[in-house]
Length: 92
Image 1 (cartoon, rainbow, N blue to C red):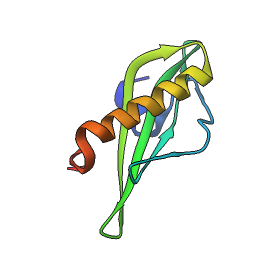
Image 2 (cartoon, rainbow, N blue to C red; image 1 turned 45 degrees about the horizontal axis):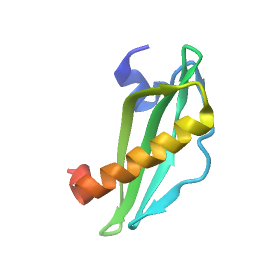
Image 3 (tube, helix red, strand yellow; image 1 turned 90 degrees about the horizontal axis):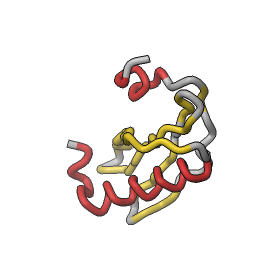
């Protein structure tokens, strides 16, 4: 399956419940890992309400792990890192 198909909703081998979103500096980070070849792909979404409109930034990282908990943890850390480095610029 192509990278873009996965990124925009095609998913991997199997969709996974990434748990509840985590708040960080006024943003929400949601882990959306998927299985790929027996491993979990690090993937997530950062959202924030800006001027009454919900903005969304999807990200996929090259990181893979055999543990769902690790994939969720890595995704949440990466999402927080994106927020810290880019702030609202990620939505442009």
